[in-house]
Length: 388
Image (tube, rainbow, N blue to C red):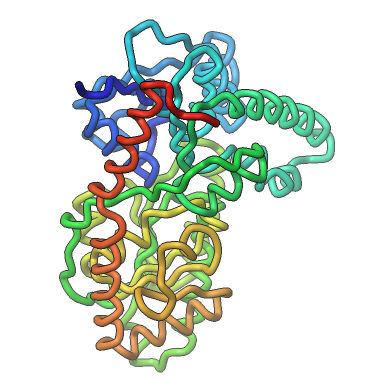
């Protein structure tokens, strides 16, 4: 008998890697989705064919301006207070704090994309951005969230981490050493290689932790190392969604200003899946410089498109990119620029790297591999066999 799966997701407002994984799981199990915020025209259109129920926002929160604080309160309270009435076998939680659904419900499998980064590994960074009078209140609020979060996580039946990087955060912040790594898959057959149209691509949500400025600065350094004739041959394309949150909008303005000051850089927002696949297919190489990324599907999609990946040597890319074989792992903007130049000057080597990448993805990151392990764990939770 098919598993009756319920999916919990903090929001469906963008087209990102986590949303892609969630969509595939929901389609596979024909699962109902609970989310605290749903914008069907801004996320993947396929969600419209599924049963999606928005459970936020309460009347009090509507009085607050839209932003990180109101979002966090909305998402947290929505799942903390939710008691499911329908029949189900397992709940599959995704982006934090949707796992707080465990407060009033049982049989939860958390597919952890990352613990709440603002509360844990990015806490000091976020605190540094606050004004002096804001810091005491911020500290108190974060401490309260940590207490709630950790008390709930200890009761979750099972946790899959999307990467070793995320697994280490789960162990560090929750003391849960029983999480298992299960990398998200991709539909590699949907990607193709249509040649080299002389541009570098960075496709990712436009956000401070994705560090679009890193890619722009690297491209500037790359151009500076070219002769006058070569400078006009290459460009950089930044492609990604932008949240309406004020903090992200301010960052977007900053990036647009950097683009204005840099020749041959283009920003594309709101690209469809078809358009994104086309951009991959014609790129010279794909750049990926986010800050300690949890996992990251971008390198996999680049490799599926037979394209070399030039990624920062931290976080998820360290697990998926084989340095020197399917791409390069770099430690600075200068190194990224050097590898861009190397790829541009050695097209035959770039082609070989692309072929290696495609083979790597086909062998290790198919959905068949993912669901074989995922389904086995769902069955165990359904029958109450999982022990923490």
